[in-house]
Length: 72
Ligand SMILES: [Zn+2]
Image (cartoon, rainbow, N blue to C red):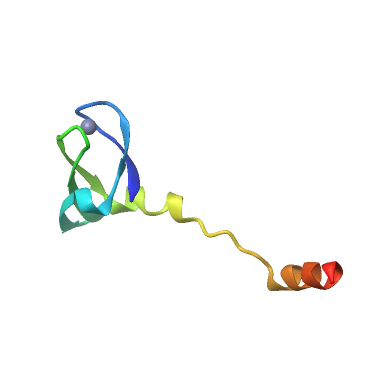
């Protein structure tokens, strides 16, 4: 899912996969067609929505082991 600024209701809406009605390849990436919660048909390019929200957090395994050892 991703956050989309709807051009019809002018609100930032959380768009779930169940709202997506179509996926079309384009030069910039995949164009997602979906229906906003307000009922308006919207589109967005996947490059805009799937890059930022999925930054992984990394945990150093050695740090976790050290903490467990120190607590024991
Ligand atoms: Zn809307």
